[in-house]
Length: 224
Image (cartoon, rainbow, N blue to C red; front, side):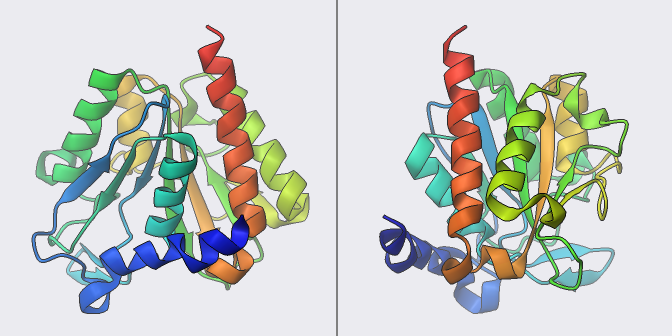
């Protein structure tokens, strides 16, 4: 199964890697629909602008999102091209990404948002789980989903490799997790993933941990 993912599905990264990861010239957010109440976001799968500085793309976050969408039916929003903004930093009134995401979550009764990002290999963690600091401001007083995700990440990748707001915390009100949790009252998790574990040849355990987590969350939501 994983060979299929590496050989076939990861080729979908080509959809956003054109023009040196500037992506499609239209530069707009796109949503792949799904039945799950867990939604995935990848705003940095193409280059983006923050304070007049063009930032590199978080490569393979798009491919990971597509895989989760296909495997578990999770709706997936991504930025398909450079538009001179940053979905995780630009104020909502200037962010088509945040506006589209907000509308979709409200219309489709989404109950959890996982916002996927890439972090450098220079940190001593493979994944950092960001929830608005140790106060867990973006969880809206709900810890069930976080507990499942953290358990599986530690199981597959090793507890020593998983951070808990240790590198990033997404406390800025313009981050996607902070903005959506405040306006939709649903738990939101920003998942920072090191490049070495995003790469196709190294990502099997990462994908297994995320898929198992979301499958468990889906099951519990469907029991209601």
